[in-house]
Length: 159
Image 1 (cartoon, helix red, strand yellow):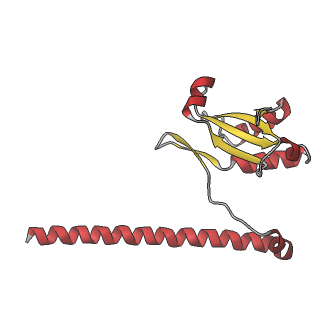
Image 2 (spheres, rainbow, N blue to C red):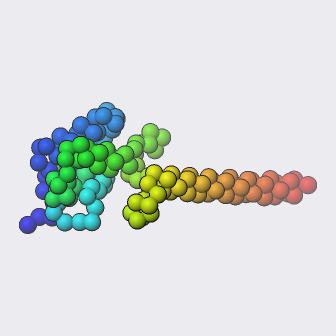
Image 3 (tube, helix red, strand yellow):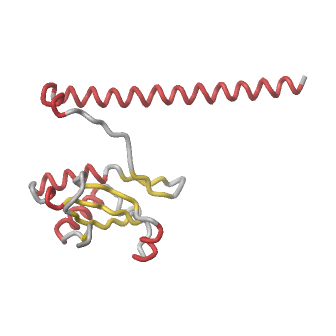
């Protein structure tokens, strides 16, 4: 038995509806949903490789891999939310003309969330944003130091 199969029409419709809602379909990203009965992720989004795009004759193809038994265990509203969350990691970089999959994520232990609720989510978000800011400042300082060293080298050679 194959690991993946093409998703039933109802699941494919959810994926296509969400792609339309968030504008990904309008910018030319093509989605194909597959279902599986195994895996640790309920929904996984992956860019199709070049061979898959050639064989399918579909450019900018993205696969949405869904663990069907888990997906079918919840109501349609939850299914839409899960697909929206998964597709929120997909973006298109106009400058580089390529699809980007992935974005910063937060992780909150369930026990911690049960104790602190939304405060736990806020703390995780603050942690990510603060880390991003510090890393960005480090990059800027490194670039400035590199530029300073470069300009000092030009001054010495010009004297």
